[in-house]
Image (spheres, rainbow, N blue to C red):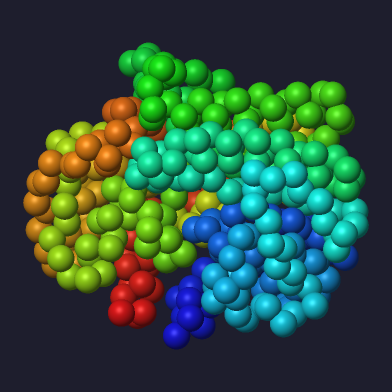
Length: 353
């Protein structure tokens, strides 16, 4: 069974597709998306293609990627559709395509998003968030995009200074820029500044969704984030391995809620603005998250010292909870708390064992 054939996954797609959003903005339009095969990008593509079938949106999807076989394996349901187009492309190269004319929406979701990648490919981490972003911005300007979305991150806030419980969009905490690990948050900060420069200098309509730690059944099994490691252990019936004291207090977002937030920002957000995508019901300490997942898998939590590569890629932030009032004012709300989202993720992924 492929993931799109799973009834619970189809339920998530239909739920987001049923939201009260101005879907007509996609009518007879197009979407170009980098990171199309990733955790969030792949779900977004499935939602738009679902809407093409159900609402007859006639919205062309241009999915960027380096590997056609990988993309065909993930999007086999859509590959033969005249509305789905795979575009072979390395995000760090200048982007030119004679198969795409004027474009509706451009989404830059491609990024290294897990600790081992930060530690082993720090150059790629930075260049994707800056050079890759610039390539996408240049393409959007040249092809007269209606709107551009840059997927930013909770990590741009840095370390909580101890003066707030939750970060709003104006908060700016401390990042030690003279470290390997700083490559990801600093390049996301620079990416946001680059977006503002293009908005002012080129007149590009840009919105910036700030995602927090996202999870769901579309996760890549190469992902080395703690939550992804916990989920993999639960799927194979092993004890959950905690590689710290677990006092880190973070916001998490289930895949469907993250994409409903992105769609809300893309279709209803104010040009030039950044929006946090988070919900209080999915804020949890890492040790409690480990215990929750262990409970779902009927296993226990064990402690293990991380190796040097893993340690170098770990975030140093101890508290990173996001306030989403600004997004909620656009009408967004989360449908999954951490327990329900985690139960669904593990249930779906276990069906592929």
